[in-house]
Length: 433
Image 1 (cartoon, one colour):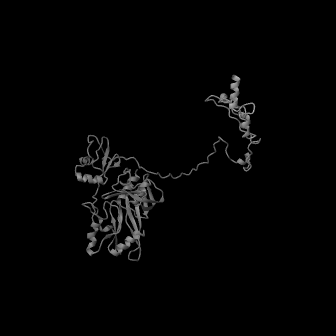
Image 2 (cartoon, one colour):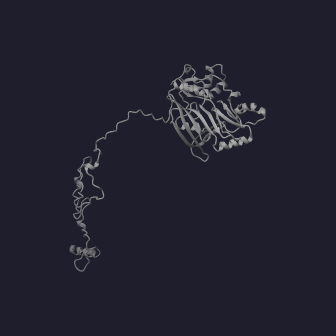
Image 3 (tube, one colour):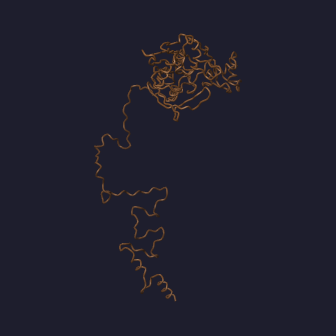
Protein backbone atom coordinates (compact mmCIF):
# COMPACT_ATOMS: atom_id res chain seq x y z
CA UNK A 1 0.00 0.00 0.00
CA UNK A 2 2.78 2.42 0.76
CA UNK A 3 4.30 1.90 -2.68
CA UNK A 4 0.93 2.46 -4.35
CA UNK A 5 0.36 5.72 -2.46
CA UNK A 6 3.86 6.92 -3.35
CA UNK A 7 3.21 6.25 -7.03
CA UNK A 8 -0.04 8.20 -7.00
CA UNK A 9 1.67 11.13 -5.30
CA UNK A 10 4.37 11.15 -7.99
CA UNK A 11 1.77 11.24 -10.75
CA UNK A 12 0.00 14.20 -9.16
CA UNK A 13 3.23 16.16 -8.80
CA UNK A 14 4.29 15.39 -12.37
CA UNK A 15 7.25 13.26 -11.38
CA UNK A 16 6.12 9.92 -12.91
CA UNK A 17 8.87 7.84 -14.39
CA UNK A 18 6.90 6.60 -17.41
CA UNK A 19 4.89 8.81 -19.80
CA UNK A 20 4.45 11.67 -17.30
CA UNK A 21 5.88 15.25 -17.31
CA UNK A 22 8.77 15.42 -14.95
CA UNK A 23 9.83 18.55 -13.07
CA UNK A 24 13.02 18.79 -15.06
CA UNK A 25 11.29 18.46 -18.40
CA UNK A 26 8.58 21.03 -17.69
CA UNK A 27 10.99 23.56 -16.18
CA UNK A 28 13.67 23.22 -18.83
CA UNK A 29 11.20 23.91 -21.64
CA UNK A 30 10.65 27.63 -20.78
CA UNK A 31 14.09 28.38 -19.38
CA UNK A 32 17.10 29.90 -21.14
CA UNK A 33 19.81 27.42 -21.98
CA UNK A 34 22.47 29.42 -20.12
CA UNK A 35 20.37 29.88 -16.97
CA UNK A 36 21.56 28.37 -13.73
CA UNK A 37 19.52 25.31 -12.73
CA UNK A 38 17.22 25.90 -9.80
CA UNK A 39 18.09 23.68 -6.88
CA UNK A 40 15.54 21.28 -5.50
CA UNK A 41 13.55 22.12 -2.45
CA UNK A 42 15.51 19.83 -0.22
CA UNK A 43 18.80 21.28 -1.60
CA UNK A 44 18.02 24.97 -0.92
CA UNK A 45 20.21 26.56 1.79
CA UNK A 46 18.70 27.54 5.08
CA UNK A 47 18.18 31.14 6.07
CA UNK A 48 21.49 32.75 7.03
CA UNK A 49 23.57 30.32 4.93
CA UNK A 50 25.20 31.23 1.60
CA UNK A 51 24.56 28.91 -1.34
CA UNK A 52 27.50 27.03 -2.82
CA UNK A 53 26.84 28.48 -6.29
CA UNK A 54 27.41 32.07 -5.01
CA UNK A 55 30.82 32.14 -3.44
CA UNK A 56 31.43 34.64 -0.66
CA UNK A 57 33.83 37.56 -1.03
CA UNK A 58 37.25 36.60 0.12
CA UNK A 59 37.99 40.04 1.49
CA UNK A 60 34.86 40.19 3.65
CA UNK A 61 34.80 38.12 6.84
CA UNK A 62 31.93 35.81 7.52
CA UNK A 63 29.09 37.12 9.65
CA UNK A 64 29.94 34.71 12.40
CA UNK A 65 33.61 35.72 12.28
CA UNK A 66 33.04 39.51 12.39
CA UNK A 67 34.51 41.33 15.40
CA UNK A 68 32.29 42.33 18.28
CA UNK A 69 30.86 45.84 18.54
CA UNK A 70 33.51 48.28 19.70
CA UNK A 71 36.42 46.31 18.23
CA UNK A 72 38.13 47.64 15.12
CA UNK A 73 38.73 45.32 12.23
CA UNK A 74 41.35 45.63 9.55
CA UNK A 75 40.04 47.21 6.38
CA UNK A 76 40.73 45.44 3.09
CA UNK A 77 43.39 46.93 0.93
CA UNK A 78 42.16 48.74 -2.22
CA UNK A 79 42.57 47.06 -5.54
CA UNK A 80 45.56 47.91 -7.63
CA UNK A 81 44.26 49.82 -10.61
CA UNK A 82 47.31 48.98 -12.65
CA UNK A 83 46.53 45.23 -12.57
CA UNK A 84 43.30 44.71 -14.38
CA UNK A 85 41.39 47.30 -12.38
CA UNK A 86 40.12 50.73 -13.28
CA UNK A 87 42.53 52.46 -15.69
CA UNK A 88 44.40 55.50 -14.47
CA UNK A 89 43.34 58.98 -15.57
CA UNK A 90 45.59 60.22 -18.35
CA UNK A 91 44.16 63.74 -18.56
CA UNK A 92 45.64 64.79 -15.20
CA UNK A 93 49.26 65.95 -15.56
CA UNK A 94 51.86 64.21 -13.51
CA UNK A 95 53.35 66.23 -10.67
CA UNK A 96 56.71 65.49 -9.28
CA UNK A 97 58.01 66.64 -5.92
CA UNK A 98 59.96 69.41 -7.58
CA UNK A 99 56.80 70.86 -9.17
CA UNK A 100 55.07 71.46 -5.85
CA UNK A 101 57.07 74.60 -5.15
CA UNK A 102 56.84 76.01 -1.65
CA UNK A 103 53.75 74.04 -0.71
CA UNK A 104 54.13 72.97 2.94
CA UNK A 105 53.91 69.35 3.94
CA UNK A 106 50.86 68.06 5.74
CA UNK A 107 51.02 68.91 9.42
CA UNK A 108 53.47 71.77 8.97
CA UNK A 109 52.31 75.35 9.69
CA UNK A 110 53.34 77.91 7.07
CA UNK A 111 55.37 80.87 8.21
CA UNK A 112 53.42 84.10 8.66
CA UNK A 113 54.64 87.26 6.98
CA UNK A 114 56.22 89.86 9.22
CA UNK A 115 53.83 92.48 10.49
CA UNK A 116 54.31 96.08 9.66
CA UNK A 117 55.63 98.27 12.46
CA UNK A 118 53.48 101.20 11.33
CA UNK A 119 50.63 101.96 13.67
CA UNK A 120 47.31 101.44 11.93
CA UNK A 121 44.31 103.57 12.68
CA UNK A 122 41.72 101.70 14.78
CA UNK A 123 38.43 100.91 13.16
CA UNK A 124 35.38 102.89 14.15
CA UNK A 125 33.09 101.12 16.56
CA UNK A 126 29.75 99.96 15.22
CA UNK A 127 27.85 101.27 18.18
CA UNK A 128 29.66 103.62 20.56
CA UNK A 129 27.89 103.64 23.90
CA UNK A 130 30.05 106.40 25.32
CA UNK A 131 31.55 106.26 28.78
CA UNK A 132 30.05 105.43 32.13
CA UNK A 133 28.16 108.33 33.62
CA UNK A 134 29.96 110.16 36.42
CA UNK A 135 27.41 111.95 38.63
CA UNK A 136 28.15 115.49 39.72
CA UNK A 137 28.31 116.92 43.24
CA UNK A 138 24.58 117.76 43.25
CA UNK A 139 23.45 114.18 42.57
CA UNK A 140 21.14 112.62 45.17
CA UNK A 141 20.92 108.97 46.23
CA UNK A 142 17.39 107.79 46.98
CA UNK A 143 16.99 106.65 50.58
CA UNK A 144 13.82 107.40 52.51
CA UNK A 145 12.25 109.03 49.45
CA UNK A 146 11.71 105.69 47.70
CA UNK A 147 8.22 105.29 46.27
CA UNK A 148 7.79 109.01 45.53
CA UNK A 149 6.89 110.27 42.07
CA UNK A 150 9.77 111.81 40.18
CA UNK A 151 8.01 115.18 39.79
CA UNK A 152 7.24 115.20 43.51
CA UNK A 153 10.86 114.42 44.34
CA UNK A 154 11.96 117.22 41.96
CA UNK A 155 9.86 119.72 43.87
CA UNK A 156 11.13 118.28 47.17
CA UNK A 157 14.74 118.95 46.13
CA UNK A 158 14.11 122.34 44.48
CA UNK A 159 11.40 123.89 46.59
CA UNK A 160 11.09 127.04 44.49
CA UNK A 161 9.57 125.04 41.62
CA UNK A 162 5.88 124.35 41.17
CA UNK A 163 4.55 120.98 40.10
CA UNK A 164 3.74 122.23 36.61
CA UNK A 165 7.18 123.79 36.17
CA UNK A 166 8.84 120.57 37.39
CA UNK A 167 6.94 118.43 34.87
CA UNK A 168 7.76 120.85 32.05
CA UNK A 169 11.48 120.73 32.89
CA UNK A 170 11.38 116.94 33.04
CA UNK A 171 9.87 116.82 29.55
CA UNK A 172 12.77 118.96 28.34
CA UNK A 173 15.22 116.31 29.60
CA UNK A 174 16.76 117.96 32.65
CA UNK A 175 16.85 114.80 34.84
CA UNK A 176 19.11 111.74 34.82
CA UNK A 177 18.54 108.56 36.78
CA UNK A 178 21.62 106.32 36.94
CA UNK A 179 23.02 108.22 33.95
CA UNK A 180 19.93 107.87 31.73
CA UNK A 181 17.60 110.77 30.92
CA UNK A 182 14.12 110.35 32.36
CA UNK A 183 11.22 112.54 31.20
CA UNK A 184 8.18 111.00 32.95
CA UNK A 185 7.20 112.78 36.14
CA UNK A 186 4.90 109.91 37.16
CA UNK A 187 7.76 107.42 37.48
CA UNK A 188 8.33 106.04 40.98
CA UNK A 189 11.88 106.35 42.23
CA UNK A 190 13.55 103.32 43.84
CA UNK A 191 15.96 102.79 46.68
CA UNK A 192 19.61 103.35 45.75
CA UNK A 193 18.99 105.18 42.49
CA UNK A 194 21.24 108.16 41.72
CA UNK A 195 19.22 111.15 40.52
CA UNK A 196 20.66 114.38 39.19
CA UNK A 197 18.76 117.47 38.00
CA UNK A 198 20.04 120.10 35.57
CA UNK A 199 18.27 123.43 35.80
CA UNK A 200 18.63 125.76 32.79
CA UNK A 201 20.83 128.79 33.34
CA UNK A 202 18.60 130.99 31.19
CA UNK A 203 15.04 131.02 29.96
CA UNK A 204 14.18 129.35 26.68
CA UNK A 205 11.69 132.08 25.83
CA UNK A 206 12.82 133.99 22.76
CA UNK A 207 12.05 137.49 21.58
CA UNK A 208 12.91 139.17 18.31
CA UNK A 209 16.61 139.87 17.86
CA UNK A 210 17.70 142.07 14.93
CA UNK A 211 21.19 140.54 15.01
CA UNK A 212 19.72 137.18 13.99
CA UNK A 213 18.38 138.54 10.69
CA UNK A 214 20.94 137.16 8.20
CA UNK A 215 19.33 138.28 4.95
CA UNK A 216 16.50 140.70 4.08
CA UNK A 217 16.41 141.34 0.34
CA UNK A 218 15.14 139.90 -2.95
CA UNK A 219 11.87 138.92 -1.31
CA UNK A 220 13.68 136.53 1.07
CA UNK A 221 14.18 136.77 4.83
CA UNK A 222 16.72 134.47 6.51
CA UNK A 223 16.58 134.26 10.31
CA UNK A 224 18.93 132.41 12.65
CA UNK A 225 16.39 130.46 14.71
CA UNK A 226 17.37 129.48 18.25
CA UNK A 227 16.60 126.08 19.70
CA UNK A 228 13.39 125.23 21.64
CA UNK A 229 11.29 127.22 19.17
CA UNK A 230 9.06 125.74 16.42
CA UNK A 231 8.88 127.50 13.07
CA UNK A 232 5.08 127.49 12.81
CA UNK A 233 2.39 127.28 15.52
CA UNK A 234 1.71 123.80 16.83
CA UNK A 235 -1.53 122.30 18.05
CA UNK A 236 -0.83 123.20 21.68
CA UNK A 237 -3.09 125.72 23.45
CA UNK A 238 -0.19 128.05 24.35
CA UNK A 239 2.01 127.60 21.30
CA UNK A 240 4.63 130.24 20.53
CA UNK A 241 6.49 130.01 17.23
CA UNK A 242 9.07 131.87 15.17
CA UNK A 243 6.35 133.03 12.80
CA UNK A 244 4.52 134.71 15.69
CA UNK A 245 7.72 136.52 16.70
CA UNK A 246 8.61 137.79 13.21
CA UNK A 247 5.17 138.88 12.03
CA UNK A 248 4.91 142.01 14.19
CA UNK A 249 8.34 143.18 13.03
CA UNK A 250 7.94 142.67 9.28
CA UNK A 251 4.21 143.29 8.91
CA UNK A 252 4.63 147.01 9.60
CA UNK A 253 5.64 147.59 5.98
CA UNK A 254 2.66 145.60 4.73
CA UNK A 255 4.84 142.67 3.68
CA UNK A 256 3.77 139.05 3.89
CA UNK A 257 5.68 136.41 5.79
CA UNK A 258 5.45 132.91 4.27
CA UNK A 259 7.68 130.08 5.60
CA UNK A 260 8.96 127.92 2.75
CA UNK A 261 10.68 125.21 4.83
CA UNK A 262 10.90 124.13 8.46
CA UNK A 263 13.31 122.93 11.13
CA UNK A 264 12.67 120.85 14.23
CA UNK A 265 11.92 122.84 17.37
CA UNK A 266 15.21 121.77 19.02
CA UNK A 267 17.24 122.31 15.83
CA UNK A 268 18.81 125.74 15.50
CA UNK A 269 19.94 127.54 12.37
CA UNK A 270 18.82 129.26 9.18
CA UNK A 271 15.12 129.45 8.31
CA UNK A 272 13.96 131.01 5.03
CA UNK A 273 10.73 132.96 4.61
CA UNK A 274 9.28 134.73 1.59
CA UNK A 275 7.70 138.17 1.64
CA UNK A 276 5.90 137.74 -1.69
CA UNK A 277 3.67 134.97 -2.98
CA UNK A 278 5.56 134.72 -6.29
CA UNK A 279 8.88 134.36 -4.45
CA UNK A 280 7.31 131.76 -2.16
CA UNK A 281 6.26 129.63 -5.14
CA UNK A 282 9.75 129.88 -6.66
CA UNK A 283 11.43 128.87 -3.42
CA UNK A 284 9.06 125.94 -2.89
CA UNK A 285 9.88 124.68 -6.38
CA UNK A 286 13.60 125.00 -5.68
CA UNK A 287 13.25 122.96 -2.49
CA UNK A 288 11.14 120.38 -4.30
CA UNK A 289 13.70 120.01 -7.11
CA UNK A 290 16.60 119.83 -4.59
CA UNK A 291 18.20 122.95 -6.03
CA UNK A 292 18.72 124.45 -2.57
CA UNK A 293 21.93 123.18 -0.92
CA UNK A 294 21.92 122.93 2.87
CA UNK A 295 24.70 122.23 5.33
CA UNK A 296 24.32 121.23 8.98
CA UNK A 297 26.73 120.99 11.89
CA UNK A 298 26.19 117.97 14.13
CA UNK A 299 27.93 116.69 17.23
CA UNK A 300 27.71 112.88 17.17
CA UNK A 301 28.83 110.07 19.46
CA UNK A 302 31.94 108.14 18.60
CA UNK A 303 34.10 108.43 15.51
CA UNK A 304 32.39 107.74 12.17
CA UNK A 305 34.27 107.46 8.90
CA UNK A 306 35.93 110.59 7.57
CA UNK A 307 33.47 110.83 4.68
CA UNK A 308 30.49 108.78 3.64
CA UNK A 309 26.96 108.66 2.34
CA UNK A 310 23.86 106.83 3.51
CA UNK A 311 20.73 106.10 1.51
CA UNK A 312 17.55 104.53 2.86
CA UNK A 313 13.78 104.73 2.69
CA UNK A 314 11.99 106.19 5.70
CA UNK A 315 8.62 104.99 6.96
CA UNK A 316 6.49 106.32 9.81
CA UNK A 317 6.36 103.87 12.73
CA UNK A 318 4.62 105.96 15.40
CA UNK A 319 2.35 108.97 15.30
CA UNK A 320 0.23 110.87 17.79
CA UNK A 321 -0.76 114.44 18.47
CA UNK A 322 2.31 116.63 18.03
CA UNK A 323 4.68 113.64 17.72
CA UNK A 324 6.02 111.46 14.90
CA UNK A 325 8.74 108.83 14.76
CA UNK A 326 10.30 107.43 11.58
CA UNK A 327 12.85 104.77 10.71
CA UNK A 328 14.36 103.08 7.68
CA UNK A 329 12.16 100.39 6.20
CA UNK A 330 9.89 99.39 3.35
CA UNK A 331 6.30 100.17 2.56
CA UNK A 332 3.93 101.89 0.22
CA UNK A 333 4.59 105.28 1.86
CA UNK A 334 8.40 104.91 2.09
CA UNK A 335 10.34 108.03 1.16
CA UNK A 336 13.90 108.05 -0.12
CA UNK A 337 16.47 109.86 2.04
CA UNK A 338 20.14 110.48 1.17
CA UNK A 339 22.67 111.95 3.62
CA UNK A 340 26.37 112.67 3.05
CA UNK A 341 28.83 113.80 5.70
CA UNK A 342 32.41 114.88 6.31
CA UNK A 343 34.12 114.75 9.70
CA UNK A 344 35.55 118.16 10.60
CA UNK A 345 37.15 117.27 13.94
CA UNK A 346 37.37 114.32 16.30
CA UNK A 347 36.79 115.66 19.79
CA UNK A 348 38.44 113.50 22.41
CA UNK A 349 37.56 109.82 22.47
CA UNK A 350 33.79 110.03 22.44
CA UNK A 351 32.63 112.66 19.93
CA UNK A 352 33.06 114.10 16.44
CA UNK A 353 31.92 117.33 14.84
CA UNK A 354 30.45 116.48 11.45
CA UNK A 355 29.47 118.62 8.46
CA UNK A 356 26.27 117.08 7.06
CA UNK A 357 24.82 117.72 3.61
CA UNK A 358 21.39 116.13 3.16
CA UNK A 359 20.48 115.67 -0.49
CA UNK A 360 16.82 115.23 0.44
CA UNK A 361 14.74 116.97 3.07
CA UNK A 362 12.94 114.14 4.87
CA UNK A 363 11.55 114.33 8.37
CA UNK A 364 14.29 113.67 11.01
CA UNK A 365 16.54 112.41 8.22
CA UNK A 366 19.92 113.34 9.71
CA UNK A 367 19.03 112.13 13.19
CA UNK A 368 17.73 108.78 11.93
CA UNK A 369 20.70 108.01 9.69
CA UNK A 370 23.36 108.75 12.31
CA UNK A 371 21.45 106.83 14.95
CA UNK A 372 21.19 103.77 12.70
CA UNK A 373 24.93 103.96 11.99
CA UNK A 374 25.66 103.74 15.73
CA UNK A 375 26.60 107.42 16.13
CA UNK A 376 23.52 109.21 17.49
CA UNK A 377 23.49 112.95 17.95
CA UNK A 378 24.30 114.24 21.40
CA UNK A 379 21.11 115.09 23.25
CA UNK A 380 18.82 113.15 20.88
CA UNK A 381 16.24 111.67 23.25
CA UNK A 382 14.06 110.26 20.46
CA UNK A 383 16.56 108.28 18.37
CA UNK A 384 19.44 107.96 20.85
CA UNK A 385 19.82 105.81 23.97
CA UNK A 386 19.75 108.79 26.41
CA UNK A 387 23.11 107.77 27.88
CA UNK A 388 25.50 110.42 26.59
CA UNK A 389 28.73 110.85 28.59
CA UNK A 390 27.86 114.54 29.11
CA UNK A 391 24.55 116.27 29.61
CA UNK A 392 23.21 118.59 26.93
CA UNK A 393 19.83 120.25 26.95
CA UNK A 394 18.88 119.49 23.31
CA UNK A 395 20.09 117.54 20.29
CA UNK A 396 23.13 119.28 18.83
CA UNK A 397 22.13 119.91 15.21
CA UNK A 398 22.51 123.33 13.59
CA UNK A 399 21.61 124.54 10.06
CA UNK A 400 24.78 126.49 9.35
CA UNK A 401 24.62 127.28 5.62
CA UNK A 402 22.07 127.62 2.79
CA UNK A 403 22.95 128.14 -0.89
CA UNK A 404 20.26 128.79 -3.51
CA UNK A 405 19.67 130.70 -6.76
CA UNK A 406 18.31 134.21 -6.38
CA UNK A 407 14.52 134.00 -6.90
CA UNK A 408 14.55 137.41 -8.60
CA UNK A 409 17.62 136.75 -10.73
CA UNK A 410 21.13 137.99 -10.19
CA UNK A 411 23.82 136.67 -7.91
CA UNK A 412 23.16 133.40 -6.04
CA UNK A 413 22.45 133.60 -2.33
CA UNK A 414 24.97 132.11 0.13
CA UNK A 415 23.72 132.53 3.71
CA UNK A 416 25.73 131.43 6.75
CA UNK A 417 25.22 131.47 10.51
CA UNK A 418 27.60 131.18 13.45
CA UNK A 419 27.98 128.10 15.62
CA UNK A 420 25.74 128.15 18.72
CA UNK A 421 27.11 128.39 22.22
CA UNK A 422 25.77 124.91 23.09
CA UNK A 423 28.27 123.34 20.68
CA UNK A 424 31.24 125.17 22.19
CA UNK A 425 30.29 124.26 25.77
CA UNK A 426 29.75 120.59 24.88
CA UNK A 427 33.07 120.33 23.05
CA UNK A 428 34.93 121.78 26.04
CA UNK A 429 33.44 119.13 28.31
CA UNK A 430 34.17 116.31 25.86
CA UNK A 431 37.84 117.24 25.55
CA UNK A 432 38.24 116.74 29.30
CA UNK A 433 37.01 113.13 29.26
